[in-house]
Amino acid sequence: MLLHKFIKQPYPFLFTPIRNLIVAFLLGVFIYLLNLISIDEALVAKSFTFSKQVVCLFAGLSTFIGTLLITEIGTRFFLGTQTKEAWTVGKEFITIIILLFTIAVFNNIMAFVISKKTADYNFLQQFVNAIIYVIGIGSIPTAIIIWFNYTILLKQNLKEVSLYNKQLEASIKQQDFAKTHTLKIETNNKSEILMIDLANFLFAKAEGNYTDIFIKTPTNYKRTPYRISIQQLENALAQDKHCIRTHRSYLVNLRNITSAAGNARNYRLNFYHTDIEIPVSRSKFEAFKKAFNSLV
Image 1 (cartoon, helix red, strand yellow):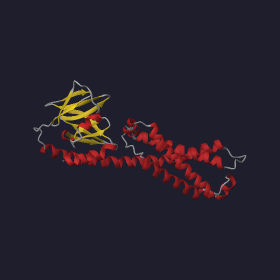
Image 2 (cartoon, rainbow, N blue to C red):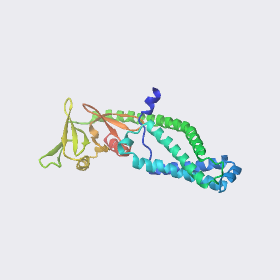
Image 3 (tube, one colour):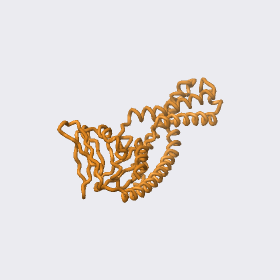
């Protein structure tokens, strides 16, 4: 039960191009050195048409290519934005197991291509043995690394959230909500004008061709849809440094945040009179942090 709960915990999607290239290179070098140290030279001479150093180099190169195939091409073309933003511990673990499987496949193909193909060479047996070895050995450190990384990220995010909440409390006491600043914004509906009072504007949520505007009332909030894209709204509010995008679907008014919460993947913002939590995606975090610090 605890394991089932843990694998569903939020986890940051860390597969960026530079990181993927570094990981692929390091894994390639590791496999090269591991084979160079552990493989018997006599066995290499008997089984392969190349020297031990060249065989080890091929193994490292196969690992490099297999790693990039999964971490860069696989995650780029087969994982959508919503999947990445809803990344979990379980998805991270499965992805790495698939990566280990791919490395084993690439190395087996490489071994088959450069082998002398003697009568006693059993490709299927070698393939199965390699899969069991790579996944069996690799899954344990993978689980430990993910757990360790999750724990560190969670503690770091919760610490920052605690600090933000203290700053928010001080900021709320200093703000004067009696001041109003109303903006007039044209929408894609010619008969419709969006009037936003920045003192009471909470956040906006993209809904297809419409954007829902959430406005604070004395005891609750009011939601009104307008025919305007979230990008158009962001452009219209560009001069206000406290109205920013925190997510591809959300634009928030930092003045009306009441508290923040966090997990290992991201931050979530709370607003006056509403229990809706607004996510801060990792790609938007630095912009959020900069705008938030300027507010407090």
